[in-house]
Amino acid sequence: MQYMDVERVGSYESTTRNVPARGMLRKVIVSSILGNALEWFDFAVFGTFAAVISKLFFPAVNDVNSLLLGLATFGIAFAVRPIGGVILGVYADRYGRKRALSLMILLMALGTGLIGLLPTYASIGIAAPLMMVLARVIQGFSISGEFPSASAMLVEFSPPNRRGLIGSAQMCSQSLAYTVGAAFGYLMSTSMSTDRFESWGWRIPFLLGILVGPIGYYIRRKIDETPEFVSMISTRKQDVNLILKEALSRHSRELLAVFCIVVLITVSQYVVIIYVPIYAMRVLHLSMGGVQFSAVVSTVLIIGLCPLAGYLSDRWSRRAVMIPAVIVYNVITYTFVSRLLDSPSPENLILFQVLGCSAIAFLWGPVPALMTEVFPVGVRTTALSLVFNLAVLLFGGLAPFVITWVISVTGDRMVPVYYIMFSSVVGLVGLMLLRDTSPATSPEQLNVTPLGLPH
Image 1 (cartoon, rainbow, N blue to C red):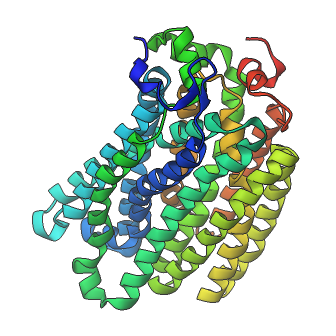
Image 2 (cartoon, rainbow, N blue to C red):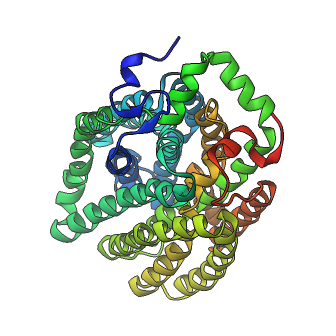
């Protein structure tokens, strides 16, 4: 099926050159940040309120078992992500990034609104956790294509020597979502009594998340399709079966390398940013207000530092930024998690998250450009969706549950540190498998011969 002409004319300076009209790049960056942040906000608030949701929807004989059930539900959304990622990735590679992103944000609003409206276990019994699982499945399917499609959108609109900087906006928008989610948690937990917060206060961000659908859809329908996709679709049809077959058969090394890099990135996200605050509240018994304040401060740092990391990766190279950051990240994790466990306090939690997230920013900033530019445009979102969601399922989304369970069995509270170190080794292997990219590399070289190997 050929791409509709109406989708690719009118906003380009030349239909033969496929160059974005003046100002379109700025419009794409703004819409990508806002739309992506809105979608990730819906996904992030579940992690922010996981402790409360566990108590209300998954009552158990003790807090640890209740938390395990809540974290398992948090992780269930990731079980559908490889399937959803392939479906939405193929859709984006056949019909365009713009259409796929518009569809995803409507699905996310549906899943989030369902969570905000659900009666608790005390009201409807076993139906409550079952419906919560359904809502998470909808969220997981929606988010499965968000990172690959939004990253492709940003990178394909970017000049070759600014892909790291502009691509970093993708990670800034995710951090913005976590910042807003944590800010909601801080404001409500410090301004409401515990009873009022657990009765109805926790629902507020989920109900507001319903607005994500119409607002995000409007934002994304106002931008153009990417020039690279328009150029590609004008010269050949995209067959669904061939897209997936080409991604698997001709890009196996890149798929393995990106899988390893995603392991590193997803563990930093779901362990440091999501799991550590939950653990601090439920196990170390720190106040929710103090924990959410530390999350706000640390994610604001990521927003500020990611563009710097992306800019440096354009000037030097992706690996020259990321490899030193991996080493610093591990030193900080070992040193300051040990300190937090020996002396639990809001101050030690803030210290760890501030320093840890500063290092994480230099891992995250170059990643959208690094992972998208190694795949040709015709299979880009399919390939990235496949490995991204598989790595997130196996090592990210289930990490909070696995770590909590291992700690409960072994009693070793350093398990999160070991998990982070393992992910770092895997990530370094992935970085070594990819040929480093430099600002001088042209889009044609990146799209036609990734790693210097003939297709």
